[in-house]
Image 1: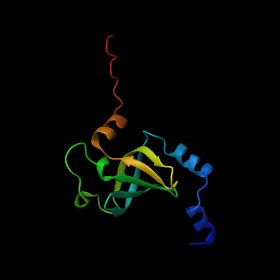
Image 2: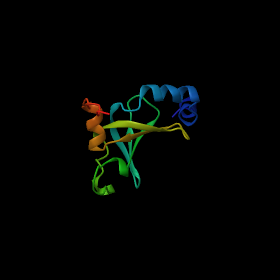
Image 3: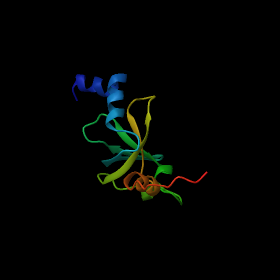
Length: 116
């Protein structure tokens, strides 16, 4: 890795971070490849970006208990919804793969307003 690209990866400025956030908007469906397993979740490679997607263990299932043994295999393409950003290190986009979150984003149902 060249020094210049290493500097880019290690020191993303606030302008670049805002560009990342505008590219990966809250509620947006994205796809990426599972890159790494961690005890607290999985990291997902986002195409053409210096940042990683992170799906934490609580963001996999609506019900039941998720464990590391259930993680998708490394290299698997998965879909998820952008639910937040790690502004403290400017390198992670938080994702959710919960069925209810995916369904809500992919099938935006019209909910009638309740009568007052």
